[in-house]
Length: 158
Image 1: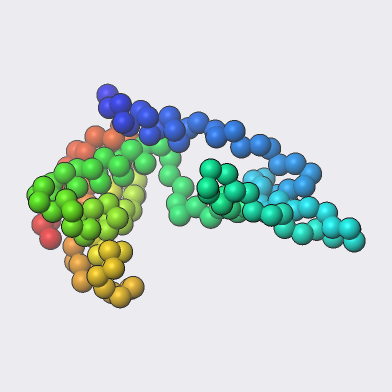
Image 2 (image 1 turned 60 degrees about the vertical axis):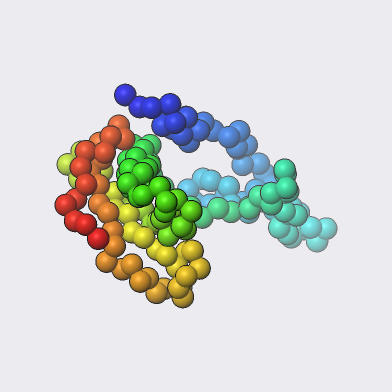
């Protein structure tokens, strides 16, 4: 059974945020999703519209997702990350290199399970030059059910 935070996360992802269908003033990519909205010029050409700013946020015209995950893969990633973060000593909680900010999560699927690999990237905390990772051999690998239950951690201790 999923816990309340998992239900909230899943429902948030499943809800359509009221995205309007493409109108005649919106260019559409091959996949059918809107790209850059355009407006007609006086000379018959088109120009990009002014940026939409709502609630202090400039909303992009074209989003490039970092990744697309199905709901169970997202639950698996979340469960593994939470398990890892909970395993760190409490006195490390304020150290950036032991927070979600410093973690890179990869998800794979095999045999009905999700395998979640978490790598620590301390350069995201400003401690090393980009591309240099002093924790290159540090990782955690978890087997997670589609329901988001962490079944096991790969027997490796960094």
